[in-house]
Structures are given as C-alpha cells and as structure tokens.
Image (cartoon, rainbow, N blue to C red; front, side):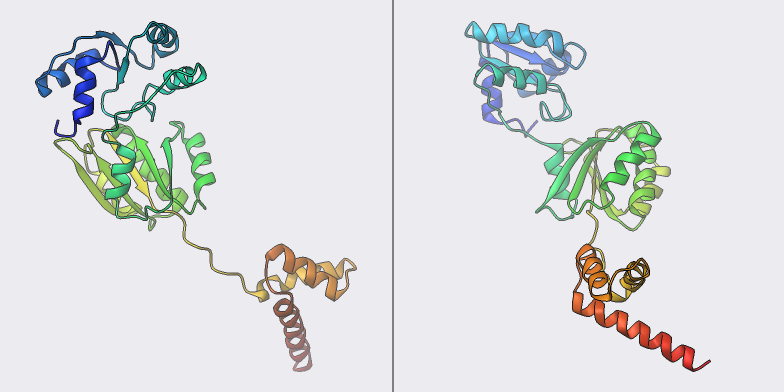
Length: 273
C-alpha cells in the first residue's frame, strides 16, 4: 500500500468515473488506503473492454474525468487499457498516467542482468510448438528479455527457455513484485528450472533472461572450402575470394592468404605420400 502515490490517492477520491478491472479489488484498495471515492465505479476488463470503451469515452466527451485502474499491473501493459488509450488518442482526448509499480521495470532492475538495452516479450504462446517457434526467433536476441508467465505454467516455460537458449543462460524469476511475499531468484536457467520442478509456485511471475552473447569471430580458414567451391564452378581465385569475403564480412587479404596456405598444405601432403 505504501506504493500508492499522493497523485493516485487524489485521483481515486475525485475522479468522476473509475473504470476498474475488478471492482471488488478496487474497494479493498480504497479501504486499505483509508479513503473514499465520489465517482461512479464501472467494471472494465478483458471481456468487456471492446464494448465498454465507447461508453467510457462518451462520458469523457461529456466533461467527466475518467480514471482507469487495474488489479496488479500497469494498465495497458499485458492488462486492460490499450483499447481505451488507443481510442482516446484517436479522438484527441487528453490521456495521462499516474505511474506506479511496474513489474517489467522492477523485475529488470532486480534481476542483476544488463539494463542498458532490453525488450519486453509479454506472455509466450501456451502451445508448445508456437512457444518453441517464438523462442527460436529470440535465440540470437542480444538485449535482456523480460517475460510474464502464469505460475502453473512457469515450469514448462523454463524448460522451453532451457531448450532454446541453453541451460547456462543467466536469468531471474521474480515473484509478487512490490507485494508482501516478493521473491527474486537468480541463476542459470537450468538451476531455475530445477527450483520450479520442486516448488509449488504462486503469485504474479516475471522472468528476466540475459541476451545472447557475441558470436565468436569467424576465421578466414573457415571459408576456404566456399572459395574452392566457387573456383570449381568456374570462378577465378580473385573473384571467388572477393565474393566469399564480402558475404562473410572478413578480410579479403586474410582469406586469400588462407586459401594459398591451404593449397600449400595440400601440396606438401601429396608430396609426402
């Protein structure tokens, strides 16, 4: 409750309309903060937001100040709110935020992983095949990645991450951030998977995974066979080296030397037989 800002408390007390993801939780929040609301309270969640958005904007057009609150996350970030903000912005209606705790940024800050560049991937697909496909696309992602996951699917998710990224990839599992039972576990993916396999996980989950490391630079010797293949197809040595060096982004001079060295080795091997 200490994370509720003065600005949020003022909005709760004075907004003309409050759109709540769960009206019962809103009442518990207001009670815990020791305040009361004066505005009309309406439910606004994933099952009715498409239909109710137009009604809420109509109230705003009539001069009402509308406050939208969600249960345990930042509105419009894997929570209801995107449709409302999109529709309001399209009409030129003023929209602002009273920032509070964000699981994405809090998990990132507590993960112990690089924070200078990161991406938020939300929830992975539930089906194993689709999930594997998404992770294959992210295998070479260099930025730190932040995911959300339901507690009962965490073990399967970590197993998929282990398979796609390798068990040694550094990661963190953050649970119940900014709440009473906050917990952050850090370690390689295989250790976090072992923990999840033996634990009954509960609460809101964020998973942070380190980005892929830099690939080892390729040596010119690794591309000699490609040069020889082009020569076998009729290319001149100089042209073949230039083509392969351009594709592989390596030095033409070093590749040319590697081809000549390989030829010298082959000739020496033949002479010794």
